[in-house]
Image (cartoon, rainbow, N blue to C red; front, top):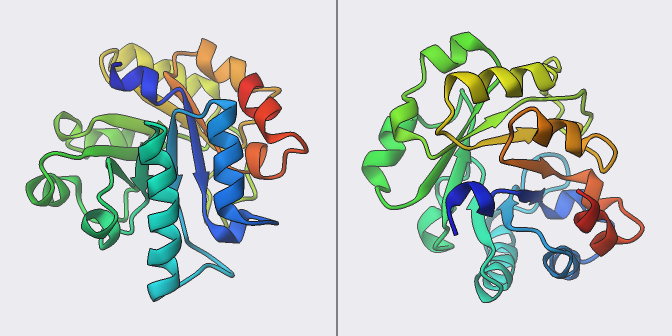
Amino acid sequence: MELAARLRKYFIMGSQNCDRNPVELLQEAIEGGITAFQYREKGKGSLQGKQKLELGRKLRKLCHDKDVLFFVNDDVHLIESLEVDGVHVGQDDEHVESLRRRFPGIIIGLSVSNEQEVERSPLHLVDYLGAGPVFSTSTKEDAKKAVGVEWIAHLHRTHPNLPIVGIGGITTDNASSVLTAGASGISVITAITKAEDIQKAVRSL
């Protein structure tokens, strides 16, 4: 399966996003049909050190057993210890060129929210783009201003061969508009973690 298809339903989560056991929550999301998962143990209430690594290993095994792509966010130090499939970084994290030199075989995703960021990014070294925040979001404390589905459409026109994953404020109600604009996939946190029926929520994304 090509990468674009494997990014279709991209779930992001850390223990700080969960009201219950994150391993059980991820298991339900996998059963519902997520195709990729990003371990983002970051922010208020997140685990540190050994506990962070132990949870990561449990989540990694779940994904490996079910052939779900496993990413970490900018926790570059977890790349080797968790044997990740990929890493996703923002504009202020470790530079893509450095990551590609150090880890030539992994998938690299990069967040872009405006044309200036695109122009200064080495897109030839990137495997997919994270575009957003598409809609306003309260999950990330440092989230930028919403860019709308127009940004997705623009990236799809200008970089048609690069998979795009929409991120930020995406719900079961608006996910289709992001895909229609040209995204290969959509990434969500609370649309799954806060869902009453997780499997149903994943299927409707």
